[in-house]
Length: 102
Image (tube, rainbow, N blue to C red):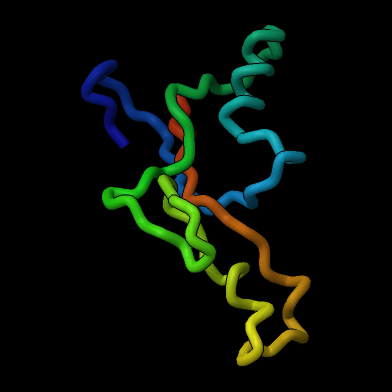
């Protein structure tokens, strides 16, 4: 992608990350590596979960401000095939912008 602010090409990573308190967002890892002066590491210009344009209410009644999967909420329903129960995780739509391409 092209950054209008800096006038340079940047790398945009658009992905779905597993939501877990045990996992650190990739952008924070880049920030820690840069703070520790690790050589040859790109700088994260921006990162984070993608917010929803409209506020939605999930099946369980909680407010969701982020673009996230819903399958994990329905996999244990009576009509669901439960043999896949352990394979579904909660994911958030996540983007990371790095300062270099290549």
